[in-house]
Amino acid sequence: MMDEYSLNDVGYKFYTSSEEDCFNAFEQAVVNKEWVVVPLWKPQFLHHQYTIREIVAALDYQVSREGKSLDEVTKTWLTEQKNNNLVLS
Image 1 (cartoon, one colour):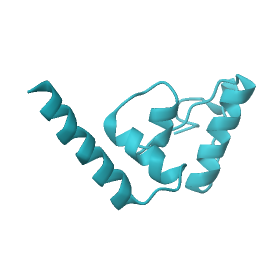
Image 2 (cartoon, helix red, strand yellow):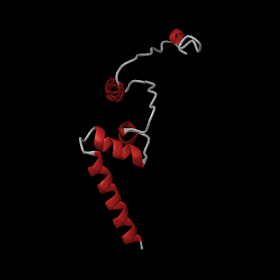
Image 3 (cartoon, helix red, strand yellow):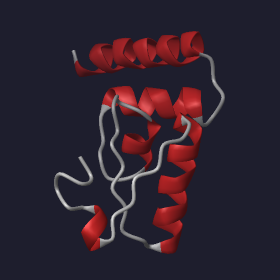
């Protein structure tokens, strides 16, 4: 793809690495205010922490970056939803 779209010719580079390396590279680019393109192949914590907001990303952030268990995160979210529905009734 890089050659097909002449992306190498205009200065883009493609790096293959681990998922964690990809996350760290993106976060470092944000700190450095650098332009990067990162293919995000599933909802994840980066959506929650940066521009894109959605429920799954917020939950993934808690698991991936705050070290909470998936069970803890989902039970808390479900309890909050239940409580919000009771308040709104």
